[in-house]
Amino acid sequence: MGARLAACLRLVMLSIALPAFAGGATTPTEYRTTLYLFGTLMEITLVGVPAERAEQVTDRLEREFQRMHRDWHAWKLGELSALNARLPSGEWIPISPFVAPLIAHSRPLSRLSNGLFNPAIGALVELWGFHSDELPVGKAPPADAIRRLVAAAPGMDDLELADGRVRAGNPAVQLDFGAFAKGYALDLARETLASLGVGNALLNSGGDLCALGSAADGPWRIGIRHPFQDSLLATLEIDAAECVMTSGNYERYREDQGVRWGHIIDPRTGYPAAEVASSTVVHAQGGLADAAATALAVAGPSEWLNIAARLAVDQVMLVDAAGTVRVSERLAPRLTFPAGSQPPVLVALPPSDTPPQP
Ligand code: AMP
Ligand code: MG
Image (cartoon, rainbow, N blue to C red; front, side, top):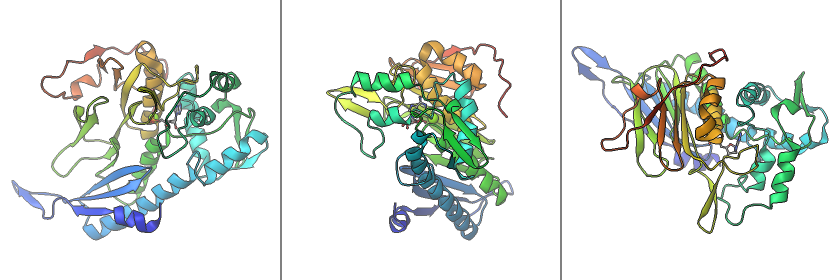
């Protein structure tokens, strides 16, 4: 997006213009900016930061996010798409310290998810038509093309990373970090905020969000969107460094005569995961929560708890295609469901032999 358009889309507003006084204590000011990033609106809220400083901070975040958007993009011009073009050669390719961590950090998550989260399946995602700003329409891709890509079994372990270079031992590897990059971007943005002395902030990108500290008047109040309705499924409060990431096949899909093929692909079959409407993960790490939410959407109602245990995420929720809501015991007490909604099914996670992710 051009800088001018980005500037036009940038709406700055001071949500609480004046400090309020309650019982002698001062409520800090909230500064809120909405940016157009990663193809969606990102709302940045900073607490207790004077307006001029807050503008500098959000400018810095915006520059960093724009670079991520360009160089982490699977198919638009930038470092990752250039890398993808060269990966099938099997040669060593230089990789920058800006892109290499995506591979390094997502690889162990891919392993732990038993390959259900697999950023190496970019070719399948493209085959289904999701490497486009427009939603694809029309028949599913030919079954034999899907079968060929599944049989080629591209995986993150096919990549070798060494000395600022990378090479793929499997020519079918095409990297698409769509399931991980937003959460990881929010992790890096929180590091930037912390380095700039901002301790209370909320970064909310279309409902996927990470928080630092708390809001001006107490914990952050967060809404989790409903996969079938234009309303909230549940709300929760956050007053620590935590992220809430939701995956859903309702977000992006390919429509064919009333049939919707979602954008989350099951790497085992090559077809979109169809049993789950949405999956939500609450965790301190955005990248992990993002990858896990995608993995749980692929795993489906019969397997999701095992995959959650393997990934050591224990605050999880799944809405299946029939609308049944399942919530883990650790997350359930934190959620408030709208009055009159069907009570969720409480579920226990199996014991995990994976050490908890920090
Ligand atoms: P998310 O919304 O985080 O679940 O990410 C979905 C996006 O990740 C899709 O639009 C694809 O670009 C990519 N993707 C689809 N299926 C997978 C998968 N099984 N593993 C990793 N990335 C995937
Ligand atoms: Mg994800």
